[in-house]
Image (cartoon, rainbow, N blue to C red; front, side, top):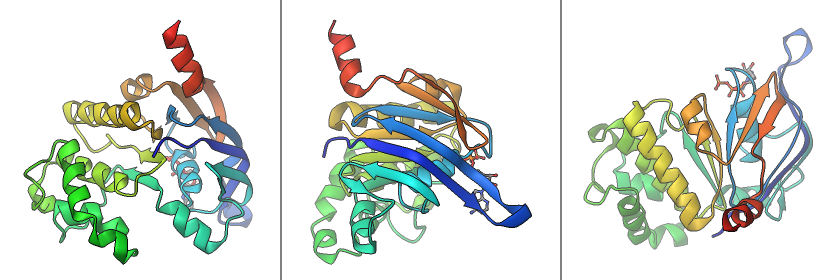
Length: 240
Ligand SMILES: Nc1ncnc2c1ncn2[C@@H]1O[C@H](COP(=O)(O)OP(=O)(O)OP(=O)(O)O)[C@@H](O)[C@H]1O
């Protein structure tokens, strides 16, 4: 599946109410071209995770509109949202693997609600694990894998639904620099090969510098947006 575009229009999200209210995302508008790679940076608490969560429909926005591909997720019903979530890949800082399942079964796990798809997924899971460099480790439990290897399993799991967009929240935050670099190499290679739209929240300046675009948030608002060419514009520029 090729990368889907994302349009975020005047989106806000507040947690709590009254004097305890925190506006995590404050009237943010942004467009991400299909197949582009965007780093989301900013200090702790600036709203990066919340923005990723509303784009991925993990949290609902309070106001504004979000359109990903042909789904307007801010007005979608439950069934449409469930279908949408199956085509979003998520990678987290803490991997979030199920400890009692093998690497292969962790990769298949997102398909379990859809029994028909899950039945045919074992071969695909093996292929995905091989593509992230884990051929031969399919039967390992997460506790038998290094942090970098666990993150590779998490990336394979994110890809099992053939996502048009992959959302990564601090994917290198729990890794040493060599493993972190290898994970970024892998994410960028996936983007180059499949055109998957990538959005990566990160505190890591080296990681951000490898993305085509860097959007910096502060207090829930966009502070700066650099290198915001769309995938097509970048491809044209590269060809000149
Ligand atoms: N579920 C929640 N309930 C209450 N407040 C929340 C919740 N989630 C986030 N917040 C608050 O919203 C603000 C933005 O948080 P968010 O996690 O989006 O920031 P971030 O930029 O991702 O931070 P970090 O880099 O530390 O992960 C913070 O003030 C945070 O405390």
